[in-house]
Amino acid sequence: MHIAILTFDGFNELDSLIALGILNRIKQPDWRVSLAAPSETVTSMNGVTLHRQARLDEIESFDAVLVGSGIKTREIAQDAAIMQVLGRLDPARQLIGAQCSGTLLLAKAGLLNGVPGCTDLTTKPWVQEAGIEVLEQPFFARGNLATAGGCLASIYLAAWALARLVGRDATTEALHYVAPVGEKDEYVARALGNIEPYL
Image 1 (cartoon, one colour):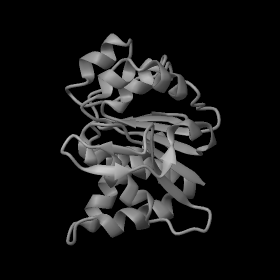
Image 2 (cartoon, rainbow, N blue to C red; image 1 turned 45 degrees about the horizontal axis):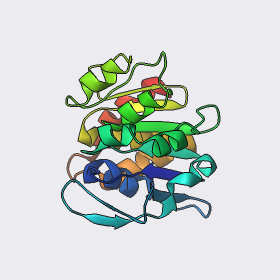
Image 3 (spheres, rainbow, N blue to C red; image 1 turned 120 degrees about the vertical axis):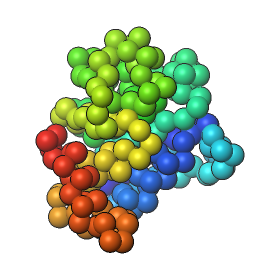
Image 4 (cartoon, helix red, strand yellow; image 1 turned 135 degrees about the vertical axis):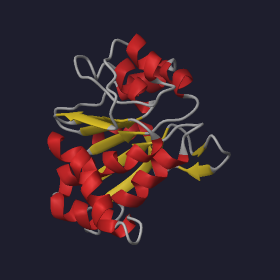
């Protein structure tokens, strides 16, 4: 099972790295979570440089793909080469999720046609311009497509991917591990409450 978190220059650390941390709580021999990028390194909106763990052009081989957000998403949406690669995503056989401005990339790739989405407040008008209904909620999924809005909603996106791939028990365990001490039960319940209607 290979999950890729698509991470581009200008990426938001919260989106990519929170999901990476939660998804890597699963310890199975065939479980792999990678930051996938179009270049060897990507630099975040706050100047943090990361080395990719997988190439973007491997996109068809990933079992699940989460698209992170960042300050350069509108530029990325105009990059024909990147958008051509994203157009190879297939919700019939892959789990596909997007966080905040990553929703714009799914919209521009034609993956959200007829499917409402969640995004952040800055990106909302751009997603609407792309013809997608934007919901005022942190998470929404239909079938194998999911979107989340707000940086910390990355927890819900990661939890959805876990629940779909390894089940509720493993998801609960992973969330419990990362939840704040003294708030673990309510934290897990809140996260599961946001994703369970869509499982």
